[in-house]
Image (cartoon, rainbow, N blue to C red):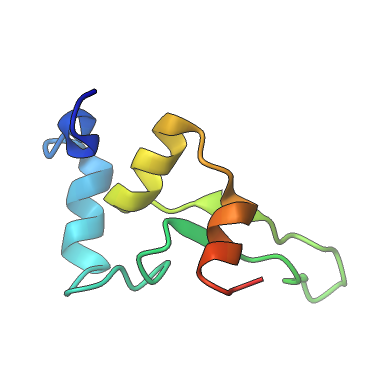
Length: 80
């Protein structure tokens, strides 16, 4: 089995954008969980627009690639 990082393309503009704007030692979007949870977010008119999304960070992209369960990942980190 290949290393999880083998399929990450550092020339990918999404990865470059993430590196430039959202990282220091930890992904500031997802806290290195790989999942962004916006469930419970509503528009000013009351429409529910939240959902679970894979993050654009390498953790999220590896999880998307392998089809990791986002709910399970959040439970693992005690976030839901």
